[in-house]
Image (tube, rainbow, N blue to C red; front, top):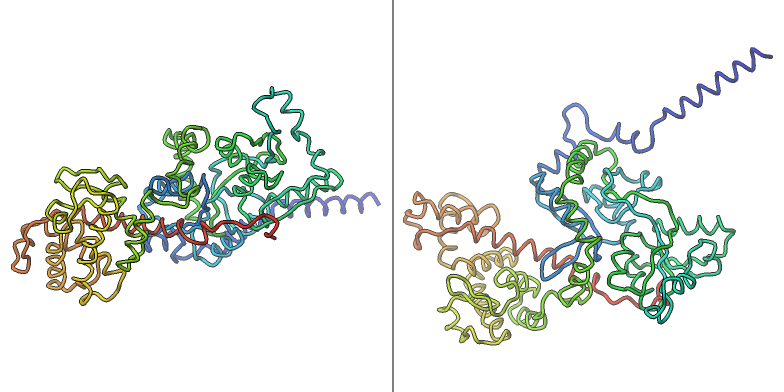
Length: 492
């Protein structure tokens, strides 16, 4: 019997060792999903494409528009990564976690970059980078009425500080989130009694509904809560309901080369002063947060500029998306109607004096008159290209380039493209390259060039920057993102 018991003991030890050494779902998939034998890895495919495709969330931390420019902790960190990898950054906005993980699995995106905590369940769906932040889940509640006149002890007595005190309370959480899972576990731990309401509203919006008094309690990540207390001082987010959790980026399972590349960069980046400044700007600097919630903050106002109504009307008149016009105006003047360039261009649309006289405006003209004159000039340029370039998006790029450097120089670049076998009706990768060559006498002295030398590098960047900003405006200033949420009682 002793020998038999010893045999059982050995078998149990062997079974335990086998299970301990068994790789996790992530590592098992990682061993088989990364191509072998010289096949192209996901990192190879991304480099070949030249674009890093990411999805992030639209809120006051990750990604938003401020004074006409895309900003945000996640966005700026991603832009640094894309620069390091020598890639363009393509941003998609979605607060739907289920959809985001599905897109990642299908290969429609390369990275999920949100305030995404790392959990065991999520590790079944994705690989994760090294952490970029640490946070914990907290209860969001309002301070008592007239709290400004109370001392700290009086305020504290009326707030929930023990998790047991949540029994009998109704707490709202984003549907399908880790907050819902944690709150269910917590309710079980205290013997039940927490009424959990899962709703299709992003956690930061729930925080704001607590602040306005529509609901009493919600759950969010501590970093999100702390940022919002700067704007809503009546909120308290000091009651934790979870241990500290790591925030990281999600990658496809098995994308080992991409994960190694990102982790190598993160290890250096997180120790840098640039990262510390970025983190402080979004999570610790109260004056910064107050300023972004001003009239310049698109998330709060739904506006790009003070002139949106005028730009919308002019865009409709000439058949252009008003957000593209807004991107051009930002590029020209940063929405400053009193801007004057070194060359004498003035106003919101930065019209040169000769062009301005043609359309009847002066530096003293009102913003509405400036915008009308600029869009009339844009329509004139659009009409010049209409017969030759039928594709609207392509034609608009030629119009933007002509607005910046002049119609004649763009026609020269088109003639050069045609002469050398390139498509004269395609801007990116074709005519833009020939415009650059108009700074070289070997090209601007050719008979097909009628307008001579041109410094095309500024126009090259102008069209790219306006187009890129337009994509951000489309991401953020749209009916889905800016839709007014119905009352909480109507959302299930």
